[in-house]
Image 1 (cartoon, rainbow, N blue to C red):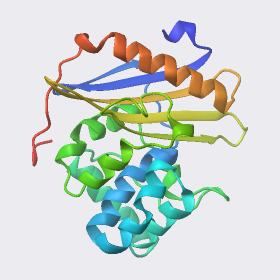
Image 2 (image 1 turned 90 degrees about the horizontal axis):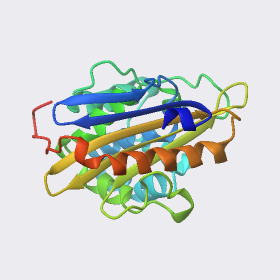
Image 3 (image 1 turned 135 degrees about the vertical axis):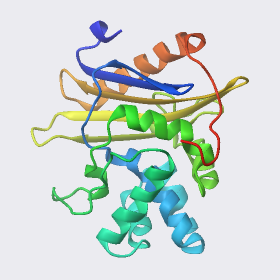
Length: 229
């Protein structure tokens, strides 16, 4: 599949107790995929206030709403620690949440380097992370204009993210929790298309999602266990 797509592609799948990565593990900005742990952290810290911004931040990927969730967590340093705590609950002790706005016009947290293997493991662990229930529900209601990859598929909880590198070329990515009768798998996909455009990145993610669907039976499906990462 990677040979059929111009550009760099990565698919990581948390299957059973193992993460399988196809293509190269992407270590670029998380972009809006990071809004998932940000939302969980905000719901833990200020559940009444966070609900006002949750739907817009997740279903429409509204940056202003996400910034409001982030602000509920205190100073940028405190906010980064709170979101890091969510990742730790999912077994990710490596990812460091970016607390400073390193590029004008973009959120600080969106510039977090979140590799696809860690993202896939996080997606699989989502149902067992305290405070995730409302966020998962919103991830199943993604706005129609953002229903690419797995987003919008029946029963799938997904969140996309996208943005340009300093040279203007786009990184388009998505994390998803797929559920079946035998359990779940967590998926993280990322594409930097050869022509650098957002549209080509979306098209490639659709291809990668179809590939995962075609190979669903090749993965071990299981459910996470609360308190066990």
